Image (cartoon, rainbow, N blue to C red):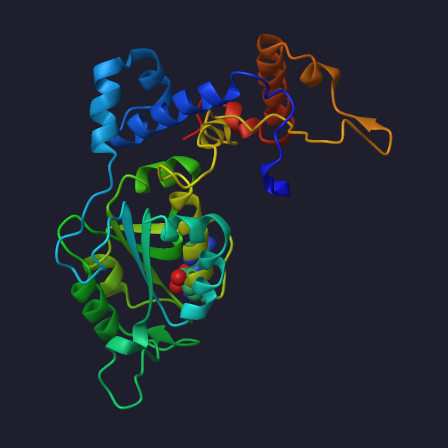
Length: 297
Ligand SMILES: C[S@@+](CC[C@H](N)C(=O)[O-])C[C@H]1O[C@@H](n2cnc3c(N)ncnc32)[C@H](O)[C@@H]1O
């Protein structure tokens, strides 16, 4: 077993059955667009089978992708494809692509520039510092890639702040086209005429949208059915239930004199669940009280 797959304490007999049930519930929630909690309560056997069928990989229709089954397709448009390629070709992202869950393509926007020097930027109209990305290559790129049902995202610090809920929403899409800015940003006609959603990964300014796109793709793809080894863990993750996750431990039971909490070694699943819930609340109160506020978005 790999280090990252060590069995967590408190996860004893019956865990694999629970995991299978958890996988099933998560798949249904993803397909039916219902919250995981309500699926858990409401779902019956027939719905389980129907949702499993609906969760089967879809076949893209004549759009140039390999003739294999894929759950989701993502096209990233950037001036720096290598920034995206390395982080998205390791670990779970690699597994998602090899397993046919994700078809990822990273494109250089310059490939759609028509002049001799493949220029993709120009000075800002009206004066000002730096350069702005030109609209022509971006329009040409998006228009050649998108199809009915595609969702076009623009990475920008001016966008709506990305969150776990936004990741879950995007995980239901079939095809994302993600535009990454650079320099001072992008000609605003792209934002107005081409883009379905502007996405910010936080209140700070990066030099390049490719880094932000990697963050979004990773957060979305790990929610697709079959990507995580133990899908139940996505449902338990920080933010998924509006709380931070409870502390996790693995072997050894004692390290440099610091012990794993006794409760996790007790084998009493009800008490472990109660302990985890209380710990999750405590951590949330200490680190992210805003998540417990009534008026949070
Ligand atoms: C230097 S930034 C441009 C910032 C722009 N001048 C402004 O003030 O809004 C260059 C590119 O990085 C990306 N970027 C920077 N910060 C980002 C953030 N917080 N979230 C998403 N994308 C971001 C965008 O694609 C942006 O076009």
